[in-house]
Image (cartoon, rainbow, N blue to C red):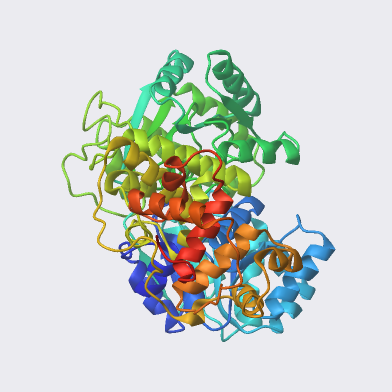
Length: 609
């Protein structure tokens, strides 16, 4: 399991309880996993999905959540796909074909799609190893986010009796937990409960007086950092967003009254760091996996502690210090009471009123806020002072992110973030799917200047190392050269890297290798395969690293003199990355020429002058 964790996700060890959950799952048993937002629930089924021979089917409630997780898995080199209403019939047919062919390890489905007989028939054709029910609290009427379609999931046990089920949620009190177990028939399974404590979050409550001015001051102290501002009404979200923009803070509004295209655009701009602040109703958030939100603000009183906990949980998912601020006024209770009185179901009315009363208690607290939240979820907080709420530490100072336990090079971190954003925009994915802030901070602390060192950085798995490693190493090496930062240079930087198992080479790489063996030129291979020459060279360099012997005697370089100059530039920079070497040459040397020279030098067909 550790090998899979390092290879695909770049982590050296599991978080608390993850390994125990995974071990239980791969033994073929059911489970209910209760973990806080940011606690690593997804890995609990993603690692077994890689271990099991068959398909893992993930039931997920929101289109945005599915897309986010599938994009993140694919970025880690894990084949995943989703089936939902956003796909055309042709796209659905394509995904189903990939699944039937065994080319997908995780398939995400919406709960309403599972209820369709045709979809169940399709699933019966497959070898399914695991069902994972994400956001499982949606199955319970006692949950804060009940979804009627989730009730259909009792059919999982009826139609697939031999397949283990893992249900996961970040918020479930005892009544909701029992409802999940009963609905999904997990009676013989095991309940895993992680601590709901989020030690990196600071909880604060401020009187709701001149709330916007206070909000503006909070955001001004965090320029360009991501923040979510929750508001009671659609109108409030638009006003807050407009007022922030008028005061020089980039912000967008998000609520259910916008068109689907407008909501998607607002969400995309936020998760891609184009707009740092989003003002939203509670319609926003469940589909967001953005790890670097540094501030969550509630301008109005939430209707339940469960909802409040989950919404604040969207801050600091990467483990770095973040703040949760509630503007409290008893007047907000009146707004909620109006809607409660309109409810026709008397049981639902009483349930909602009880949940609201607990939220009012939180706002009026004179004791530790962390202890209250944990006690609400049946967890005891034994410390007398949590050190990070406004009751335990009155007027607690803010904890800006770049002040973490270990210092790092702020200037290099900024350059790495800029490079990450460029890569993300080119691939049309959120920046955090390239690498998280925690990974970039470690790069800016350790200055890795070769592939082996970069692979040791937190969050750098094999898939991302292959896709993005060179881009980030170019930034680090260039920065190190400019600032006189030295690293050990004990081996020839142009020599091929140590060989690893040739089985790891993909079919597309091997096809390029085979065409080279037939003495075809790089230009001809690129034209024939409809790929760029740079991609051809990348395939061949990868083959060299995997121990392939390549005959490149028929490949012609522009001149021996230029090759010698390039070889010398590589030698002086102390590594085999393009940008530092090019900085030592004049502008007539292109990256394409350097890439070709590097490959020929590695292959041994040209001597290193």
